[in-house]
Image 1: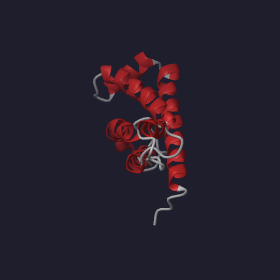
Image 2: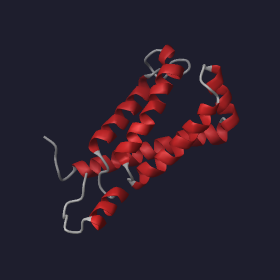
Image 3: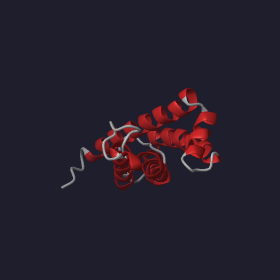
Image 4: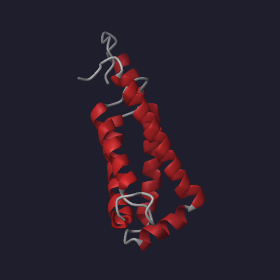
Length: 145
């Protein structure tokens, strides 16, 4: 049974954790590998190099939206293919454990499951979407989860 008192805070914790993870991952692509290096890597695994710039942008914009709690369900759906692509094109052939050479698919699949869970849970506590909905419907006393 879902605890209605704590579920919004669980969603908040998941939302913020996912946001931080996506910001860190985008930062790695921007500041360590560089966008051009990331594009080269995408090309080396058989993906179009321009896709790297789309992924970096999606990770940054998605992370900010998750952090703010804006359109969380939509953001989770938009970011899911990023993790699915990482699993299939980068980590899938490396085995299960992420400690394997090249990193296995353990972590990206867990991250994907967390995104799907976020999409199912919704915004959670302290979300921008809930603030907008409350202002649009002031007679509503319970904010949307």
